Image 1 (cartoon, helix red, strand yellow):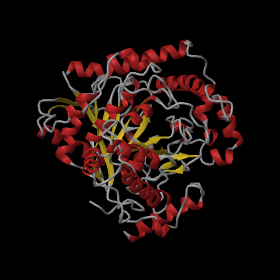
Image 2 (tube, one colour):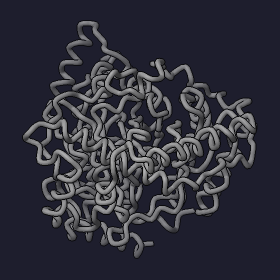
Image 3 (cartoon, rainbow, N blue to C red):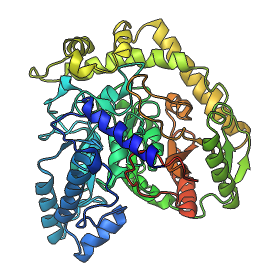
Image 4 (cartoon, rainbow, N blue to C red):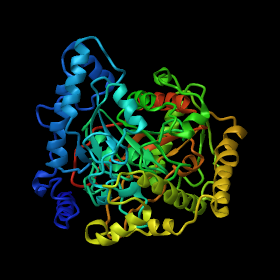
Amino acid sequence: MRRRMFAGVLLVAGFVMAGIFRSDIGSSSAQERAPQSAPEEFNLDEATIAGLVRDQQAGRYTARRITEQYLARIQAFDRNGPSLHSVLELNPDALAIADTLDAERQTGRLRGPLHGIPVLIKDNIDTADRMSTSAASLALEGSIAARDAFIVERLRAAGAVILGKTNLSEWANFRSTHSTSGWSGRGGLVLNPYALDRNPCGSSSGTAAAIAANFAAIGVGTETDGSIVCPSSATSLVGIKPTVGLVSRSGIIPIAHSQDTAGPMARTVEDAAILLGVLSGVDPRDQATTARGRTTGDYRASLDTNGLRGARIGVARAKFFGYSEVTDKIATTAIERMKALGAVIVDPADIPNAGTYDESELAVLQYEFKADLNTYLGALGPSARVHSLADVIAFNEANRAREMPFFGQELMLDAQKKGPLTDKAYRDALAKNLRLSRKEGIDAVLDRLHLDALVAPTGNPPWVTDLVNGDHFVGSSSTPAAVAGYPTITVPAGYALGLPVGISFIGRAWSEALLIKFAYAYEQATKHRSPPKFLATADLMAR
């Protein structure tokens, strides 16, 4: 046991020596990297939105004091101590924003459900303030957005204190086929707070690690395929990947408009539901939100402890079980508990065509990445370093030592070779993906078996970070809903040797309210989440 722990400390210390962390973000000695508890002044462990609102109402805390405590926590655990490197940049105006919100509360003005609540957002989301929006790339370091992203406007209107920007897998993990999730040229490597040598998954790795470590009340991530649900599963969080079109993408550095979405990452289903209600809305700048012509502003009505009673839940077994014995065991126990809570379990309820559109999905993403990123970068001001994908590729090559010390940019190079979105190859691949994943995929199995939702393990336990060979994904269930643009919610389901594993509820388009009901009922009956202990390595002797 001691030898394993020592090896873990040496491994993490070795990361620092290898220069994976940027010195301007901070590092510390191996002995300082595994504190077991927060500083004494931190009293917000596992704090919820409702609890923080009550504290402000009762006068126990002000928004400023809450913000100060989270900032101190970040200094102690992200910049020092275990040095998670999850927070890329702090908002220099956070305390001033908190003061304004406190003054408004004193006069009886409350902006919304997040009044005085600190939130961290991924650094591919525009904020028109003094923080950069860079996708964690040095190519966009110092790029200041001219306008808030629509979801940032929503957060500010709801009273949130935007505490800072989180690190991420650079360019949302769409740079290399051999990337290491959580690493960026600008921010270094994000560590998993449950075991520092384990990967937090990508690309919303920074948001996941930060919220799991209690650096803010709630966080916002983005997903194209797995980038909310995988890091949420890997850090024992609730993550909601909404239906594409429920949450606006305007002002977010893109990968692909057919699959991109932002979504909540939180420690409880209730907090994720509240945040989703704030984020969702019709935005004239995002046609996907205007096309549906409807919105649900408050998902708290779905928080029903009896929500699984009578629900028909299908087990998506083929492709999503069998890759990890410990994951299968945790998922099987979770499904048995759902049955005990009154759910009608239909097993198997396999998703037709799962795994048959991997290559066409990549082709679509490459076409859309080139087109969508060129549009975003082309709108930046003349002071920006890059204005096209070609510029980014050239920047990376010119700054290879800082940007590509561990892996390259194969995905970017392949995307640059793609033609316009009028190409028949693109249009055929997109049509194929939507048909196979929707009408002949998720919808087909839900209709045939008269199901309310599907369930599957979110993915394997976090793997040991390996900058030589890249990520070690064993399996996941994110792709069918990602390609279809349908919603997924992951909830903590347990631990394998202390490493988190999540279970996912997958549904039809616009079924967020139903999925939240199922997820909440399961969460309240199990209460699996435990805060991280910042261990240097996984306790492989645990049982």
